[in-house]
Image 1 (cartoon, one colour):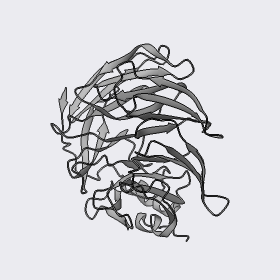
Image 2 (image 1 turned 45 degrees about the vertical axis):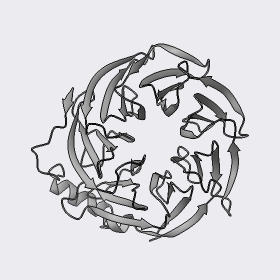
Image 3 (image 1 turned 90 degrees about the vertical axis):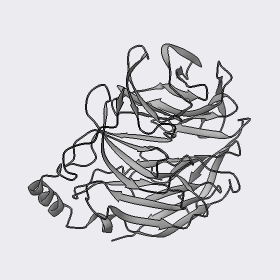
Image 4 (image 1 turned 120 degrees about the horizontal axis):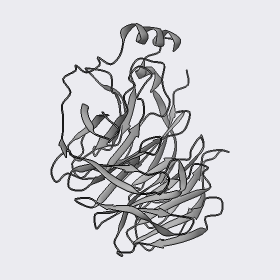
Length: 363
């Protein structure tokens, strides 16, 4: 187990000046602030109003398709084109609030978890439930994620502290693909190659696991205590943050009124705190993301929800005044954010059930 390690290196020292200057010249000298200026709301979806929308996500490599899940027990798949934006299909079948979901790589399948104790596999074209997998412990399912290199395998976290790898083609648990955390499993993220899995719980710990590609077996590697008793409600892994900051990184929301950025320092998934950014976050399950495009600009951007009903953009390479942009318009805590593949649109969801699509300013 390793406690939070603070880096001795001054922040921002990763960016080699000459390379940064050349990179910025390639980008036409637009600043990160200009790059992440948004003209306003493109559309508002309110089909889940009065029930929180804990998760939303654009489909992979798709500009106009996104989905969200709701505590009302349903999921929505929405399309933004052709205009006007509309709800394409509603996924109905869960007997309790839907806590999490994930798109398959080809977007033909969505898996979802619910407090009803089931993992469901859905056909995204017609909304059919292809398979229902019950939790063997009959416990509430809180999070899920696909194995990035093998979409037959999904990892699920439950309220009885267990992680489980499930083969969605058979609906069976994978032998050796289970482990126990110190609390309720709230968040999951693989690294891009699918070799390391990080899992966060409601007792303030992040565990790393080594994933065996051939067998689906999980081996517990490292544990980091971020803050005793705080919920680790969001983990996002990224191989590089920018072309100039080539550290593998982990972005974490942990109910400590800060967004935390960690450096991944070895092949066991050991974490070292690199930066933190002030946000209002003490109790809700708030999520954050890395911006999907690798920028030629100096700096790199992350986006997070916040309990003050705002969406915040931070430049992780900037030493002072790290806030690049702030979007206001939600009526409650913003729980999740998602960019489409070309960053032309950002979606955000809140505790009142509102989903806002924001349009980037056209240069």
